[in-house]
Length: 180
Length: 322
Image (cartoon, each protein chain N blue to C red):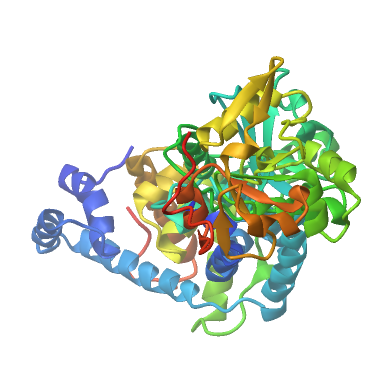
């Protein structure tokens, strides 16, 4: 009997159940508006479904989904930037006060500030930072999704952290003063 | 240009790594030694450590619940639509020319002899409406390997899950299902299949349905022949393939006036509804029309299909001599 995970109907359902919310959260954080995150997360899983049968059995499905989502996010920003140039619009930060999180964070103000700063980071830094610090991917996985080495992925995360720290520091929210 | 001391510049990356818990033991020791003597780097370390804690809190941040639920619901709808339409395919070389194999999520949906090239344009898939095609991967290679084993006589069964949605009608689907039940090494007539699907007079319609069999080889329409033993037709004009497939399975064939013919008289016989197989001269088979008999090339094949020797003619004691 041919062993084929795509032929078992439940296999991809399990992938969706395990990873959809996290991929949606990732895209929500990196692209901003809920509608865009919804569209891109849907496209992530439709693409994944098309390719799932050809995925090696031992593949890291989670990292693979992040890589698809990251590619789509990059394309999204490329298209946005073309559209903005074409219409002479000023591109605003991807996230601001409207996307402020509700709930558990001790300080909503800090979270809001953090979101705003992350939204203004250069795209690769924003993607790398979110993958590493919010979703806990390792640098190898981040490098694969960004098309760079693990070392470069680490450098993007470190640059992002330094910029975030500089951004938060003016508000007296962190001890130690600005990074030197 | 930074006016930081060189030692502080050199340790900067290790310091940040240590603050967020990613430094190696060596780097951590270097940072500890440096922090013991450098107040400004100590403050910087504390700042990054506090930042890491703040950032970590974002991981627990709940999403506005309805947005993720809506996104999931919309995804399920789109995915359900895609699942009904998507076929993955690959074209492989084989002893019977290039063969295209396609699968859906339900199973293998098409096995097609390509005789006009190896691109999709040579395939009926190129003309199927409402189907989305993607190139398949390693999963289809496994199917292909089993097919090659079968074609070389090293495998008797192809136990693939099948998707019959490319069948053109309910009648064709029922013909295909009845044909799928014809055992390895056996043959039956078109009229026999017509009887199986409850349309005894529809032998020609059965032949037509099998002419467009979307799953040749795995649904063994090559085991369905004319009442006279003539091979009649196969996948259009590929009667030579039918001859080869039957030969692989040990069905005795001869050429009469240049035309391949199954040697029915040299085969064991199974009457409809019986559990015992006979030699062709057994009196017990006379009560059934010849068209409805299933014939086996060997006792082994009949017994592998679950049948036992007839207790009257005793094919086990008096086998057919070839």
